[in-house]
Image (cartoon, rainbow, N blue to C red; front, side, top):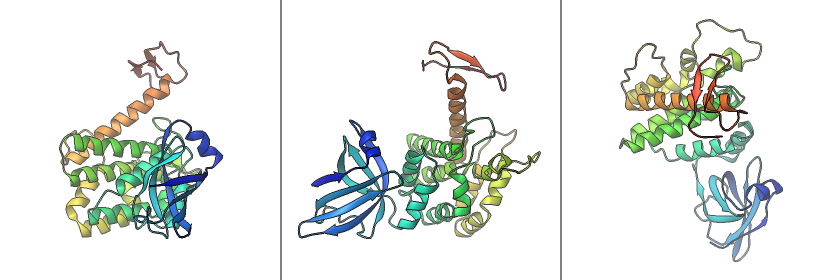
Length: 302
């Protein structure tokens, strides 16, 4: 594929210097002549024009598509890989605008892995959630906790993608099938979705004693879960299991549930460890948290 990159925004020239960069962008053909075509690759931070031989981008709908694009040292590598052909330009740019700065790579990873799911019922379910602006506008910007792990704006989305990607990796490493791996991924994305309605994510809201985010998850996803139940009862049961609090019980019925809960704990503990060691000298190998007196130890220097 012969490609020239005549214009690269200053931001991306700096970011792509001597490195390989993966970006999620809307790819659109803007012009063509007898032998070449000009396409734009754009998102909230980048606006790139590329010129390719006619037909070299035939796998991309000329009206546009959301795609993974790889650059190495400022040069386009291979073909943009379309994520999901049903995504529209309006939808794609809305995602770019809603996600918090710094979480663009998490957005790319989420949509890339979701695009690999072929199960019609599961695909319809996650689409019904991720296309709901009332949910996603909060989800992309919410905190995962008030003052525990990922307690910053955008922390909930960051944590959720971490859990989901770890979950699908564990499912694959343990030889589990596509259905289990895909359910683990979607469940990982949505396992804490109820937190968007917690008081610490809603300015002015009062703290409600005894209100658990698991219960709020069923409230947030009520319509989507009802449709999923009608489409595939087993899928509904498996995903619901990861949204339910398991107080005092370590017995999980689905492997996808076991994996998601394990990855949830690892993501939370890893973030807490980074928090308590932040700013500490490299030789410090243990720290006691001022908040809960828990002792954290590390094996790797900062």
